[in-house]
Image 1 (cartoon, helix red, strand yellow):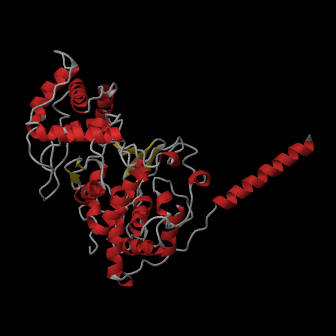
Image 2 (image 1 turned 45 degrees about the horizontal axis):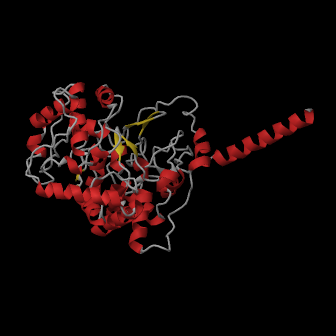
Length: 457
């Protein structure tokens, strides 16, 4: 028995030693911050475009503060993580990081000092980025304005506040390695896959996660959550009433709206705003890849979309009233609210993007969860700064929880022909109380920092 226990202890000790050997990462020596002249302008401008693909400003900038200075609270199911300062400030940013240290963070999720990074920084996607693109990103970030800004300490419970634990997470869920071309697909598809799965990290929002916070690979792009919003499915589970095509997705990503799908809102507004830096070829590649993930729509969806198009072509305005709208019912009360507050824009016949979407086309009304609809009703769509843009007022101050629930019941039944969301009222109350840290963007999405992401600043 003693020999057995001794053997068990030896095995445990060997496993522990092996884990620590795997988990330990050496520090990389600091360097003097390189001058701007160390980087070619063309490389900096390429890095600006890539930073836009990665939507870096979204997480690394607090609204109204200096770009890339970090400190943004990122809520997770495990606690709050604060984003890092990625300006070239030598004391509080990455000014003393070598390109090798930067590349290791992107590829392995390890900082210059050898600390494992939390996967709120999506290195499980960034690991796919090429050496050339990492060099361009490094050039861009190292030529930003240095900002001295220390982020707050993360608020995580023990043992999640011990970074060594992250090595175990990586052992379970992290596959390191650059993107490999799929020889069975064409160049455009591969370019789209590289951007979507790598720097674009679309799955970080659009894929559900398991109990340990890792993306469910069995449900890739099947829909997820981001900043208090539901990120719609980008695979065969897409709920868009009119199925996406490559052309409609290209237009939506290019301009932030499409007549069949409405205006980008929430975190997606910032994504489409930043994608404005990309050439048409890259937007087209992203659209090509994502449409391949959605696959051809089911026949019933095609038939339903044909019915919607016919209805839109023949209707002369007016509001559909569902059978359930008996006098005094939630649907009936919601119809009255709709006529008073919404119909003037949504039934007015004004074209997208400045007119309200006809709700027959709305994915927000069609999905099983009411959260996005609640966010839009309460907080609206703020105007972009200094330019013409879509706008919608928020009704948080004018509608009660009951009235919002009644309005949503009407929209759901009248336009999606689906039963009212049973949990809508409770979610409205929770949203008002701050249970979901809802991020609201103007339609162009670019509002994080006053100096934002110019390549020449």
